Image (cartoon, rainbow, N blue to C red; front, side, top):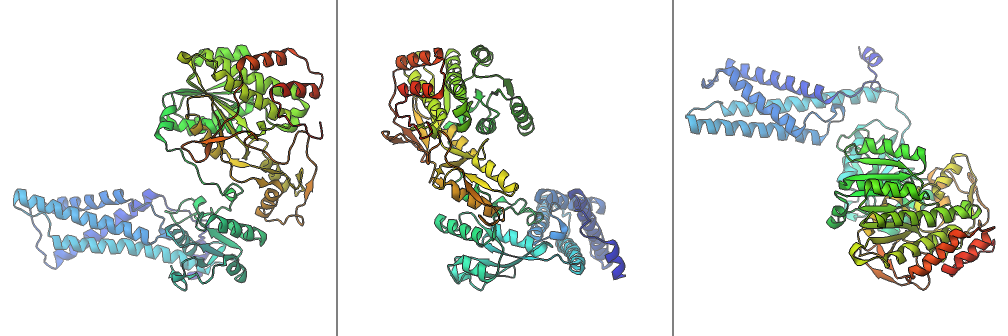
Length: 629
């Protein structure tokens, strides 16, 4: 019989019961047990009140119990993974039902001078029903464990959880209950009082400060680490050590479904390069920032790009009147339209296929929508490409910005946020210089406006963004997939990095600050050597740098410098209320001079890049010629 059952019962193929079926089973058990108990009491001669017929009393009691099943969602758990949480929910439901019946009976006695229920029997009903429901879950759980225990077990891999708290205990429950490839060996904690204690029957090790030594001694290959459980320096060192010794590290905050205690283990995710940047999560909670975008028409240029699309995504959460997404790339524009339609179906979005260099189309678009706020993210940004196509940098980054700026002023736009780059500081390439000229142009234009119609013009300046289009991270990922080598231009080259959501949240925050004319710079943290970034990414992929995947140095590209700066050498900064946002005190140019420069730039035909650079230096004397020039 046992072999026959195992032959036809395959736990891997047996899907989970839907919530409605669990509720139906619970109702069936409750009704059957209550009816059986009632009949038993009748048989032993218990004298029930005849205030109402038995059917009505029975219906009242069951109706109250079922109500609390819904209220406490006792049916949402998965029976084979039932835990103390499920038993607690059932206990609360049954206890609440009993108290409610007592209240109903008491109120009826006060008003009608008659009892409905014999409360002793109701209490007994409740105890027996609770016992039956919990017993059913234990039976199913035991049944699954029995069949799972008799199946051929996959080879398990040792895993350790670092830190003991409610999140990791919930995760540990899943390891204990689920039949997975991992075998939870022990917890590691910093609290030495927990040493040799047990949680869910799992021992806690807290006898040494060297976590990596414990992991290596016990030959652990998988670790779950709570973000910020360790001080930042220790966390970084541990992650570096784990990468070096090929120990996979998982972040429990990335795991979905803790409450269900299922799919938790299966959906464990490794730390990514984003989590290894160690930057605090930024959230927008300032009411003035949120209200600044509510009930507004907002235009985002370059809205289908990596930065622009994230700005659109975040703005949609602030209840704007409408968002106008402008881009010249058809396929990305279609992609963001599909994404936004699915994610924010109630936010009115308009998608305009427009080139910012087409002044007529830009002007017409502003007349059509009359935006209150403009985020200008449209730009060409790839340094090597623009070194060869230098006139496109002039056309898009300078005059495209001018077209948007002029149209915004003419349309009485309230606020204009220009998104710049740290490459504009002491530029060494055409891209950086073109963005610095655009910065000078928008900042000087602010000061020429009349006070009555003054548009607030803000510039935000930050460094490289992880995962953006053309990001070195994306390039490295592709090279790792192909088996290498990874190409780095110079062993000493370093860059500042931010994640896309972090950068965009700071843009939105800075975009509501000040009265206009400011250049805001972001705290980019510490610069990261590109070589170190490449080595981390190789190790995250389970490979070893230089052995499995090589790193090749190709030499600096035209216009590329070893390090980026956020501030010019002569600049000073002022603090703002946000610790990650500062104001750069760059000199403000006279707009007449800027206008004269733009006129000459627009009317000259540059035969080569050297002529263009010579023209740029008139407005950007800090332009640094690299050896390739």
